[in-house]
Image (tube, rainbow, N blue to C red; front, top):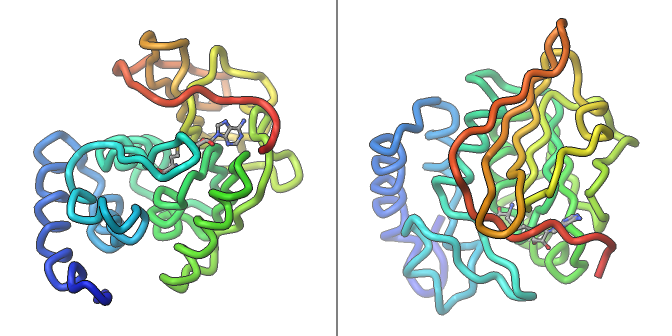
Length: 218
Ligand code: SAH
């Protein structure tokens, strides 16, 4: 991928270094690493920030929101996918569409919900530009999921929830996985819920820092 200011020419190398770092930080799934290597993160941030796009940091995307750090995206995808290609994934909190673009390589169909209409426009443009056709971006409050397209192989939430609403786990297929930051303020844990035959199995993983989930659309 090249673009007008030439950053595309160096971005493949920079991105390969980012993927190397992700590997060192413990991301193992080859499909996730390949997707992170393929999707040009710099095209998802504002021009002035493109030179920082491959640092392991969140960056502003407007409307007071941020694009999640590469590690956060890779980690959530790895937890959701378990090394297989999924049929259908729901992402709650799509922002500028970066994680949805990564997921487009890991699932046959991706539904991405975002409550801020302006960001939905940005995400759609970003995905169109990369000719990604298997992601449906919707303006919607995803607090209770999206029953219309359920059930899902995985649900990934990109904004912190104070608790896990039962409506979300209800929308998982048997064997499905929910990856969600749970908690308030600084006290958030990335949480994995698996829907097993014997019931829901919940694991609180590392401490994380996501923007809070907000109700309603804007
Ligand atoms: N997945 C994004 C991260 C975006 S940050 C990435 O690839 O970088 C989280 C996003 O969640 C913000 O854009 C915010 O507007 C959105 N959000 C917050 N509450 C929401 C809700 N109830 N429904 C849908 N989106 C929500």
